[in-house]
Amino acid sequence: MDSSPYQEDFNGGSLYYSDLPIKSQLQKDKYRHYGRKILFYLLLAYFITATVMFPFLITNLTFWFWLIHIIYFELDLTSSKNNIFVQIIHGLSFVGSFVVMVTSIILLVILNPDFISNRAKIEHHSVAFAWSQNVLIHWVPPVLLSIDLFLHKEHIRKRHRLILKRSVRRAWVKDIFKVFWCVFAPFVVVGAWFGAGFTIDKVYGVHNYNLTALLCSMGAMDVVVGIVFVYFIRKRDADSYVRLNN
Image 1: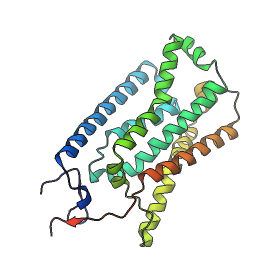
Image 2: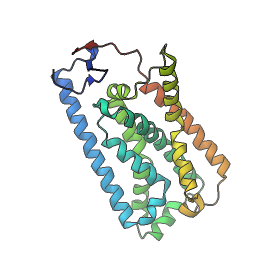
Image 3: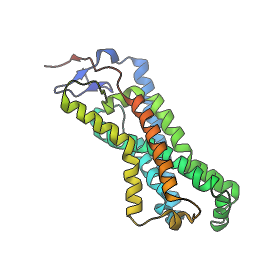
Image 4: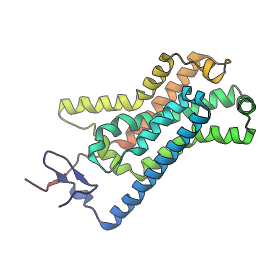
């Protein structure tokens, strides 16, 4: 049998009998794959356009995560060759998008309600345009990634291979590490951002905040979303499959 989106690589190749491909399912996967590619190019085009027009945006933590979203949407979720890349990037992108959203609401809406209008004056935009851009970069990614998770949950579960019911100690340790990475990976990026010398004061021009309280809020959102994310990507049962070749 020729390769298909459902063919796995268990030392010689195998195909899950519960996922035998049918024409309609393959057609849906094809359209969804093209949809992700279109989204990848749109995100990439926006990133390039925004950072070329306003180079200072590359210092924004938001755009660091935007670049991670771009990398994630470039990955083919139907290919087992991308297992390790999905395991590294997906949780970082998904959980990080919610951390960015909540942080933006706290800093730019609750604590500094005039921030966006003031930024519009500095960048010579209308207030409506400035708001649309902030909604796009801060609040749209969680929506896109949630839809992506819903539409591709079966492929995503295969790529993550997170079972948490293994009897083999080594496999159990690997699964626990995957859980910790999914939950805490966004703070690796946040730490790298601060480590690069960037601060909220310098980059965003925001001063009336308590860093400890802000980090606690980010951490709480990180843990909650991370746990929900792990619940959705966890495979409900161990895989059953039939061998296709000897």
